[in-house]
Each structure stands twice: as C-alpha cells, then as structure tokens.
Length: 318
Image (cartoon, helix red, strand yellow):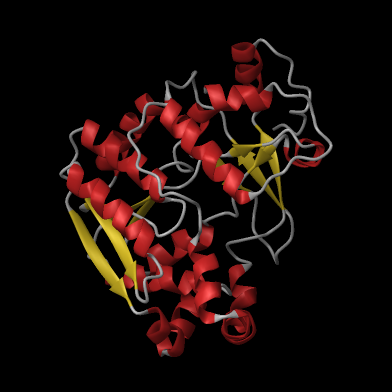
C-alpha cells in the first residue's frame, strides 16, 4: 500500500490527501528502508537507478542508496549535471559520497539554456505536463536515462504545531503531489517508484522517531517560523538520528532558486513561465495546489498508543 493516495484531481480544485496506516506498527526508518529496497527489486524488472537530485533531495538519495547497499541489491546512482555550474555543489557532494562508498554512478549532462531555448522545452511542458520551467529539466533527464527502473528518493512528511496547519491538515505539511512526475516518467518509458510516498511502512516510520515526537507533543502555537532552511536542518537531524550515513551540503538552495538567480526574474518568470502557460489545464489532471490531509483512523490510534498522548488535533479522519 502507498503511504499517501489522493482523491480525484479535477480542475485545480481542492483534493483530499489520504495518509494511510501500515498494517502493523512499522520498524525503524532504517529497517523499513531496507525492506523497501527489497520490495522495489522484487516488484520491478529493469536495472535500478537511484535519482540523485540537484536539490535538497540529495539527502534522501543517499538514504535510498544506503538501503540498497545494505540489502545487497545492485543499482547505479543517476546524477543529472546541469550546465553553467547550476548543480555543482550537489553534484560534487553526491559524487564524493558515491566514490567513497564504492557506489557506481552515471552522469547525465543537461545544457539548461539550450533546453529552455529549444523545442524540448515546449515538448516537456505538454507531455510532463508542467507550467514550471525547472520541471522541463526533469523531462530532459528522463529522456537521457537508459531503459531502467528509476527510484525517486521522495521526502518524509513534515509536521508542524502551528494553529493553521493543525486546523487544516492535522498538523501535517506534505509536498505538492508528484503525480505529474510519475506521468512524465511513464511517458518516457521508465519504470518509476517513489522510495518514500509509495511505501506505507517507510513513509509512516518517521512518525515514530525522536524528531517527530518533539513536534507532535508540542502545544499548538499561533505562529511558527516555517522557513525552508529550518526544514533542511530538521530533515538532516531526523535522518541522522535514524542512523543513516548521509553527507549533506553546507546549506539548502534548491534548483529553482539557482535557476531564477542565473536567468533573472524577467527571463524566468515573465518569458519562460508564460511560454508554458497553455499547458496549465493539462497539469490539473495530475496536480492541485490545494489539498486537505486526512489521516487513517488506525494511524491516529497507533500514534496515540505509541506516545501515550491524546492528539485531539488529528480530527480529519477516514
């Protein structure tokens, strides 16, 4: 079972994100990561490539790669190299990680200005589909990959004790659904899976860790500083506490921030985004920026039993 599923996407309207419960209490994130690696190998037939992203996901890529290594499963790291040093810091970090741990890797070079000024920009705008220029880079990356099973590292679900988040989403702060990316991978002929979101035991195992207990048990606050850099530190701490051997970069700066800085606001937002706007209606088949997180009643029961606490804010259930 997947960790999360969604109600039907329709015209950009609000969708329900269903946060599922495992059949039984999950093991530690390390134990569940190894089990997830084994499940992926058993489920998919093609050679496994772990996507080593050029943004914050490099930590999760390392987590997935460690799991495959510990499970004794062959794989390669797939590392997109963006031109103009747009991914230099993350690339150097990932390559050093792989070389120091004898992990085989392949590099996939992407000329970003040439992509943005060429026909593939609109091609992936339509077939991803997307209105975000940076996502056309993902489409180009998919095209460069061999016929393989691509493992997207995914993210853990964030939690917050802000009054707004708890009243709207049970205190959970998910990322925008990756259904468009899943569609684009299928369009490119790849097998594709999300190491976190597609596996309920892996996804839910984080909820029973030290970092999450601290937030779950906090009293509701009227305002919480949810700055992205704070999440980066939170994720690093949580992953390290779970025993994973990760090599994070010195600071968080996701690809879109670097792209905007390199191309400038007028080029990136006014010109490139406008070119992709005709594909907006297509994205509504796979995505929505408005969603409500609903929690499986069984998962609420698990959390309250484990923490011996009544989580009254978990009140949007199914």
